[in-house]
Image 1: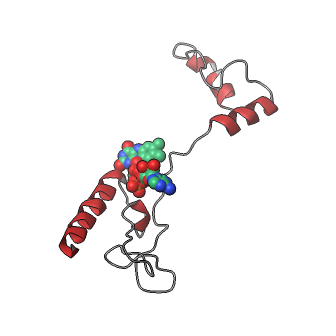
Image 2: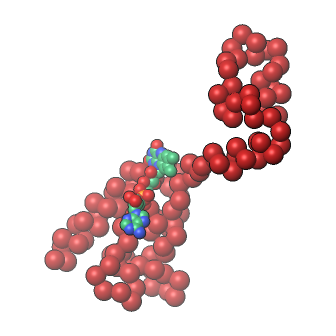
Length: 106
Ligand SMILES: Cc1cc2nc3c(=O)[nH]c(=O)nc-3n(C[C@H](O)[C@H](O)[C@H](O)COP(=O)(O)OP(=O)(O)OC[C@H]3O[C@@H](n4cnc5c(N)ncnc54)[C@H](O)[C@@H]3O)c2cc1C
């Protein structure tokens, strides 16, 4: 469908060469193979590691893993939900906060 759209005359002056998947990839089977081999996610996974005290919670409010000594989870997985902006800076903030808590406990 993308090829059909870009083949329209309105794109004649600005259309470049197709670089991916390329002219050699034509049949549905070839397109399927390209998608299987080359697609990747730019998803921002967070929130797989619930903080709290109920039976589903993985860490407590100082990021210590319930039931295990000496282990904290310090990454985007402890975010309760996806941030509305990008995730890298909040992840660094979680790490800074955790460093303070770990040093305070030492
Ligand atoms: C393609 C892409 C683009 C992105 N662009 C942006 C952006 O522009 N701006 C932004 O703010 N965010 C962006 N993000 C999101 C951001 O990179 C992540 O939210 C952030 O890095 C999450 O940090 P993390 O510490 O939770 O996980 P990660 O950064 O994934 O760190 C996990 C670390 O654990 C290591 N690890 C895994 N398993 C093991 C193991 N068994 N033993 C030891 N180490 C292990 C891995 O090697 C890795 O170093 C992007 C993400 C992707 C995938």
